[in-house]
Each structure stands twice: as structure tokens, then as C-alpha cells.
Length: 368
Image (cartoon, one colour):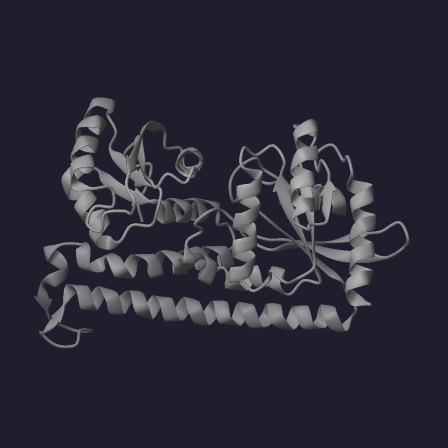
């Protein structure tokens, strides 16, 4: 794994502009991702193309321009706001002379830094291994050397094949451990259902305020709520009491983001299943985000990926204390799509008593 402490990074960020209006907001978000890793962005490049170049993603001519641009700015890292093939990553590095990351790797680096529990660390490691295997062929001549010796499959086995087998053995080991985790979670959900516990799951774009909402609704001030991306990687569940005497279990899950790497979705399947097994979803949306509707669409797409898009839901429009007037228009836009919307501030407490009552009413409707 790359150690960011070995050499200070300064990055150029790049994207292909397909003239769909998504490129600039996407680069803003990529810069935010890098800031969470402590990597400053010193410049950005937009290349107008209908489709990415299969060899270098942005085209060889633009890559050569980036080399000169980076030299003038003192950048030593190029980060592309998309997923690069091993060939594209290798070719870009060769033309520009820069270390090359893509969006998927950047997100996985943040997950790696945020992982604190053994389960989260295993999930991130699994995603990294699955990401790394297709890149092995691009590691150079040392991976094509023939070798032999104890533990190999004869003198005809290449370094590439040995390393790949090593990674695949590790993947199988982690998958077995995570399968056990999934089975335990499944049993736990079954016991909750048998005991009549109603389960509500918080989902939403990363840094939308899910952990703050869980802390405020449950009254558990020990729950960490930080203003940073992907602060929650493990499932956190607390009981929420309703004034009528009812109660429900409220679970916080990992946040979503545009182009969340499929390796991470697969690796965090056990965690994300908490959402797919819920009686009711609370989709937490940040009213102060510059792109709230785009972010909401990303959340819906991710819910489809984990087969949770048909679960009854309430959209909780959070942080209305920051943008009170704008939140009214955002709420109206969501309601025009048929969504049940609640406007709250998890931090100040505005709208939370009404939200608890609405959750309880919806649960009763769903289970009746």
C-alpha cells in the first residue's frame, strides 16, 4: 500500500468532459476526497471528448500537456475522476512521469484510513486485493521472470503467477471470514425479527449527517459524528424511544458516493445488508450540498445495487439550519418525485420530535 507519509503529494486532477454538466462538480468532489487524505490539489484539467481514450483515458496529446503543466506547478500526482484500466494507468504514468491514481483507488485509500475495527479492515483489504489483481500484468519485467523453488509450481511459473496465487489465497481467507460475519448478522436480524424489534436503517450520501442524526435521535452522545467523508464504516445500532411507549432500532451504515467502487460495494456487502434487511429506510440528504438532487440519485442507484430500493422510506432533509429557504425548494422537488420528506436539523434538533412520530407511524403502516 502507498504510504502518504513517505513523500508529500501535490495533485493535478483530471476528467473527461462529456458536456453533461457533471464534470466540474465531480472534480470539486474529487478535490474534497483528496483533501480528506491530506493531499492538496494544485490544478485541474478537463479534456473535452465524447468518450475516454482507451489507451490513456484523456488522449496522448493532453497527457503530454499535463506533463508540462505538472512540472510548472510542482505536482507529482495525477488523479483521474473515473476508474482507469491497468493499461490506461500505466500509459498515463509513462507519458506524464507522474504517479497515477483513479477515483476508485482514492476512495479506497480513505476507507483504509477510516477502518478501525477488524471487520472494516478486512473489508477494505478485500476491496484493495480485488482492485490490485487486474493491475499485476502492468507491474513490469520483474513480474514476467521465470522462477522455481519451494512453494512454487515448478520452474515454469512466473513471478506474476506466484504473486497472483498469493493474493487469491488471501482473498479466499478474507471471504470466508466475512461470510461468517454475514451469517452472524443474518442470525442476529432473524432474532430481532422474531422478538418483534422494528428496524430502521439510515442511508445516504457520505457526510450527510447520518451519525449526528443517530446520536440525536437515540440520545447516545458517545456516538462519534465527524465532519468528514466516510466517518462510519461499521454498522452502529441504537434503540430510539417513542413518546407513546413504542420503540424501534435505528442503524447507521456506510455512506454512499458517486462511482463507489464495485470492489467496495462487494466487500462491504455484510454491512450494507443491514439496510436491505430493514423495515424502513431513512435516506438522509444534505440540504446544504451544492448538488442535493444528484446526490439523492446516487443513493437511489446504490440502493438498487444492493436490492434495497423497494423498501419503504422517508427522505430526511438534514442541515436545514444552514439553508432554511433553499431546503423548502429541495423538499418540494423531492415531494414532486413522490417522496415522503421530513425537514430537520440533526445538530440543532429542529424537526426531530416530529420525525420520530412519523417514523413510528410509517413502521405501523408497513407492518400492518
